[in-house]
Length: 215
Image (cartoon, rainbow, N blue to C red):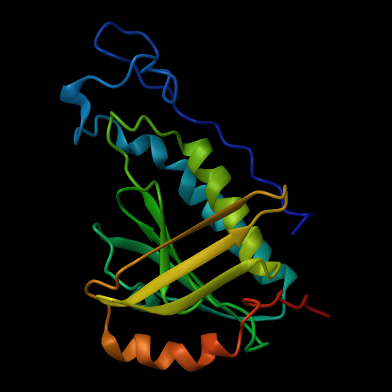
């Protein structure tokens, strides 16, 4: 995906009560104040995430051998429904069944959800509260590098049997050599989706493979 370029974005500037520009991402050098948790003053600052997601969708559709479904109905691919209304949802499926399918879901928050493979969802931003102080460009960095990991075959997921039931896990290897992994109990996951995923994932011990490019 080396020929992908993030589109130019004229990000809005937000002012505090004294008319000064809010420097999101750099506000809490000594830790966030208690009254900033669960407060979302300017969620609209994440609107550029939709522009980035649209650009990624266009790039993937124009670069790889895929089947595309652009319909709000494919938001049902998510393991849990999004917190806000869906404004666009796009499923992109490689014609190679050993490749992970990606479903982008853009919501009115504005946020982006990504369903990757069979059992894992990723959200950008994970939290938009004032205490977390996240920025649209940092969230876009995460979205872009994770999509790159998916389509280049550097994404794994699986189901482990643990004491209290199944554990859904995932891992990424990024282009810069970095790695990330995580997992959790499948609270609220449809049991039939977990059962259906197990044989497929057992046959992919090295993870999902790289998407073939379009001819």
